[in-house]
Amino acid sequence: MVLSVNHQARYWGLAAVLFLLVLWLLGDTILPFLVGGAIAYFLDPLADRLQRAGLSRVMATTVISVAMLLVAVLLVLAVIPTLISQLTALIDQAPEIFRQLQSFLTERFPDLNDETSTIRQTLLSIGDTIKERGGELANTLLLSAYSVINAIVFMVVVPVVAFYLLLDWDKMVAKVDSWLPRDHAPTLRQLARDIDRVLAGFVRGQISVCLALGTFYSVALMAAGLQFGLIVGAIAGAITFIPYVGALIGGALALGLALFQFWGDWFSIGLIAGIFALGQFLEGNVITPRLVGGSVGLHPLWLLFALSAFGTLFGFVGMLVAVPVAAAIGVLMRFGLSQYTGSRLYRGKESIVLLEEDR
Image 1 (tube, rainbow, N blue to C red):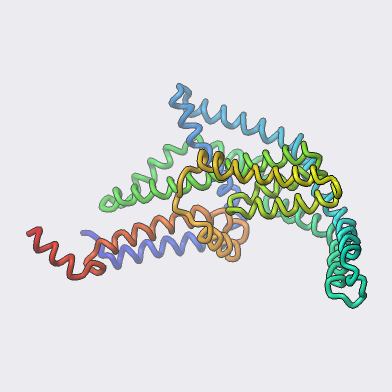
Image 2 (image 1 turned 30 degrees about the horizontal axis):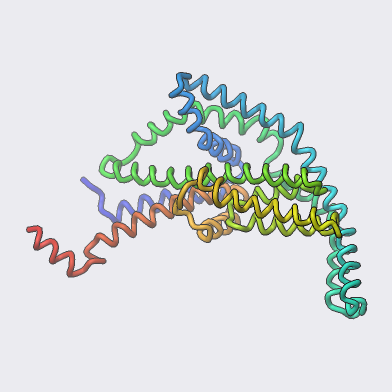
């Protein structure tokens, strides 16, 4: 006996509530499994490609794991210490930068010498706040990051989870497929393929874009002689998944630092601006079209809302699941709209006329 629509909606709604409840109650506990699952999902196409090249699943997973381990070791030894040192130096020098900004403005706008000037008081307040709180802020950020994703998670739990999930990924997908309700299995498979297409196009593509642009900005800015080029490039690359925001924030930060470091050397300042202009050209015309392709149906505003909502409700874990959940909801909404526009409720009398003509 086929279940009614009301009963089916009740069961699927209960499943969604249970998912959110588990996410809320076990957020920190399931964090390494979510991270490991995301890594396995990201690397599964590479494992499938190695299998088609003749390797077994075990050998393909081993090769990928060793390669990722070497990349992680390289990052820990070469990149991360420099990144942290530049971040610390930038925070330490922030008060001096604001003092130079104050001197620069007062020289060109003498009215700011007035002790009662609002802008003067604001600059002094910002400088004092950064001087007092800058080091504390850096320590808090580092400590909070380690408290959420500590060294044990990265060094032990996440790699183990990712390895076994990647090893058995195809078996798990087949097992889940065997659990689908037989009456709705074809529709659910199509919806799953659509969700996977959106995730593959956005998540895998955007991560690749962020890595490519972050590397380009960091290397180019350091080659141009910018003092904090690595940290600026890393910031710009990390938030590139939000259209134009990465370039705007990274460009503003880089140009601001370049003005203090290269004041009077307009060629160097123009070179910094040119790097971000070139980065935007490469992103829009080369990198994003090749790595992401066309529209994947995940609008930036919808993504921002999902990140904000899930981050507020479930913290860091919520931000991790925000993108796949947003992709799934988007696919389901488009499916629901397609069903609605083909129904008698939407077409009204037209559907009755077409039905009579078919008869």
